[in-house]
Length: 296
Image (cartoon, rainbow, N blue to C red; front, side, top):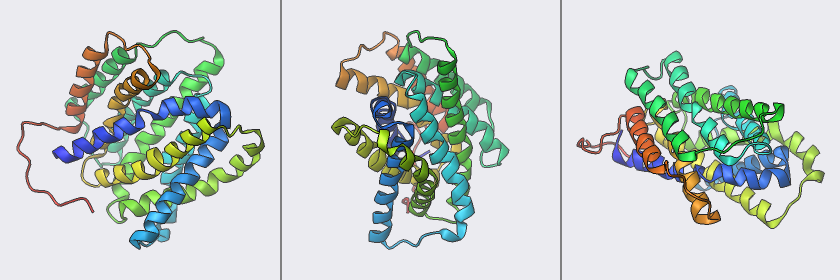
């Protein structure tokens, strides 16, 4: 992996690290259906404007492929995480989200888009342990709703893991921007009816609207486009490595913005997460980088 790809993945981790905190703020106010619908709508609008400005063609001849990608990478995980945020602390959701790398590793090998190696499996293990040390999760009520919320997070992570090798395959015949815009427009059609039904119960406070704007425009629209640009040039498993770094940034943002106490395990956990990311991506800062074509 080239250094600039690694830097871009770290940047995406910083953006996505705040997402679970934002979900905890907005989901109780807007409700899962309105939150997911508004997030998808803003992402679709943002990417559609960019498509228009850059004069890209819509890839509707691949609508079936975009439908599958939209379900796996947008509709199902957005709804599941928004619903889980009503029950689980942000740290738990971020921790369970790291299982996406394991699902991605297995599905990438299944779809023959990547190889399953001992190094990558070791990286997954280091990542899980490192995230656990960083988050240092407190107790939650072990009741049925909490268990269902945890299963929802794992289900969402599985969807992300399965969608990544399929996105890698899609970039062979579609532009990253066209894929990102197409899946969000199709996803909007799917989530709009539910969002419309739940609309009267939503509480549109300034905080909820601000969080929704950031989630839709930045962490969904622009970030998905950026991630697809990276996926085009790296392996699917390497492209999923930011999920290990997301809890690191989540804890950091919580400390800087909300004054949350940083656990004593952040340094050891952070070192393990960085090691995991290097093992999964194959990134070596000491290796000389060759010349590579810019990302289109």
